[in-house]
Image 1 (cartoon, rainbow, N blue to C red):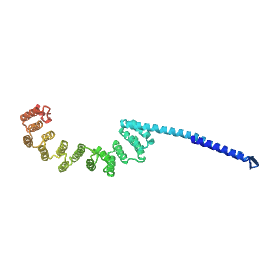
Image 2 (tube, rainbow, N blue to C red):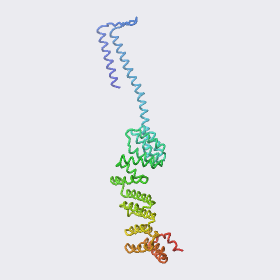
Image 3 (cartoon, one colour):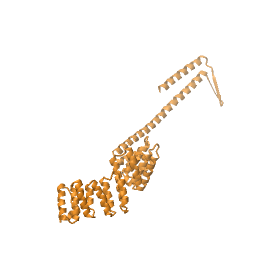
Image 4 (cartoon, rainbow, N blue to C red):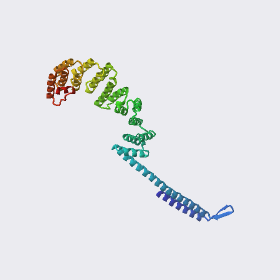
Length: 371
């Protein structure tokens, strides 16, 4: 503004000086003739008039620029104000998401996403918020918007789409999408962790394939990985126990390296074998485990097998000699003695077991001792 004012002053002073100089040299004249009209004036006056006209145009130009500039600045101010308010609402949406206020987060993030520098993030978090509310319709709409953004994170978009399929209850669709994600991003930690999250819904080959990269990348603790592997082994036992193929069950158990001494693992194995009705083989398997570790669940299971009770009595006596007496072992011997018809011995053994551990629970098959 000051620069423009200085230019005007300099221009005006120069014009006046030049006009005075022309006037001092003589009036002179200029004749303008147009369409039967004529104008005659002195040179210096004409020059002064031209200078005045240019000066007026110059002032008009700056005046109009100032007016339109104010109008433009007002509009820009209003636009910037709207953007600021949208950013503030978006920040509120992010805080709501962090605080798990899903309804507020989903609404605010979706409505303000377009005004942010990275709308993909807002649309994606909005979809995740609606999925927490089981609102699949709004989640789909937000995911569609996210997919149309620039510079998107395709892995996050793919995983959220899998979450949508799971919320909708379409497990097959989720499996197909997850398999494709594992194929496209076989070493991506987020994909592997998502696979682990929905591990129990995965087909056998997929669930086995994710454990190795998860273990190598250290994405989960050993205990968590073992739990995943255990869940898979137990499912394989359930799926195979009705096939009448004991050899297949043995193969599954042998494959469970590092988990064979886990009570959940070998008890699932025992239960599956019991459905094969091959009692001699079942006794062999359970006795092998008891020789290694006479755990309470294994002892209870063994005593409940209705086959060759005298063999079981002799075996439990050998376990007592090798591993010593425990309340559960004595209770198992009592169950076998009662099944063999030795009521007095069974009662003495029950008393001994309770004396060793007063929290020992009397099994159902020994309730007859109380009659």
